Length: 621
Image (cartoon, rainbow, N blue to C red):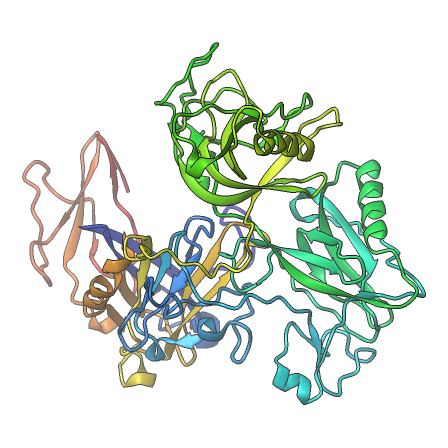
């Protein structure tokens, strides 16, 4: 409820938050929660509080996509020799962190079972995880006709299948075909056309809500799309979002979104016709497999907000940066967008003095706009330039320049054809091949995506070292202060974490104080933790040191030792003056004769809370 809206509810809690810059990227975060209800006249059932977020926070997923936690005070980050040995957390969708669920190490855990901190890591970390998206499952012996929501689980193991769980089989029945129709939603994912199609071979399944955009719903760092693969024809449909594997027990529908922007009836019809055509019914039922469609991590350079110098053959080297984050883009940076203009790619041989490994070098109109500067990329890929209209792809061995001159749209790169000279077969074959793949018969620009030509991800560079990667760490302690661990603070504390990438660019992180927690009238809860920014290699030593400085306490009203605070006032400002020592009961203000108001430095029964703020030359009470 908003504070300015009249309502019958009144909270007796006051939150006080203090941040202290400790240097070296470390922030001390002290939280105080005071229950200022009257301990003599209030009813405990009304004013006692027993559940708190201390605190509720998180990170931007696109900047810090990984989360790690230590095992036995040791944080293992992997190496070139063993990328599988990493203490990473699966980041499943928020509220999928129940015990025994898909979240694994990231399930809800009490602090006394953890290492005292969680660190979030930027792009570049390699983890050895088998990425496999599966459909939801019906519980063993369950009837979805009787319980459409309780009969399903979002995933199941092979052992559970052996015990009677049934995984939803995807496919197209010969008797009906896909029968795709538009799925009208209030908030369609990404603005794409949403469809519902008969993509299940059997009915009898209940309501599921995977709400997933990627091939692994518990690995938002895995930049791979979902593909519906027709096992009969080999056609594959790229899917931007799966809303329901099933919704009702009496039908065969799967609900998902395409990559066609929803601009109205025309785009909806286009999407329906495309999917119906790709999965046209055959003489017998056929399966649909879930496949991974990998997206390359390589991204074009970015233009600074100040812009680039333009003009014939003007090449501005100072206006470009090799990478930019989503935050930088929000603040005016612009990443080069690849695409084929209506006039076509116009590929030509690029005569460079140092051709990459003797391969054919090309220059082609493969950018959507002009206005970018000189980029000295020299990037050994390999990557794929993917035509989003035809599905064809050119494998690229080397990118020389994403842009060179401000007044053209050319990209300079090498393809996998050995250069055999001016009239050589290979050189002309390379030019013709790329011109053909990116021929544009439309009146609009065709978007090009950068794809990974390999989906294995098994090649780890010998120079790989995760230690310099950027990290942001929450230090919250091991819960030793709570009575469940032998401490004096009531209740216990737990860590929760989960992804919300299906709706926003955010990973939720929170510490809860709960259980037999009880903040009674007049009592105060204090929690001092830390947050720090560093490289990944420094996290373990810094976090273990800060863990010894965690302070958590529950303070009764009579346990405070306050000092007196007097408020003095003249015609222009108010001044708050505190006694010089703990428990002190007098103040002095030589410039002013006597205080206009007196109070205590800590909460006290019968006293109202006041706040004194100074802003420049002004002061407020």
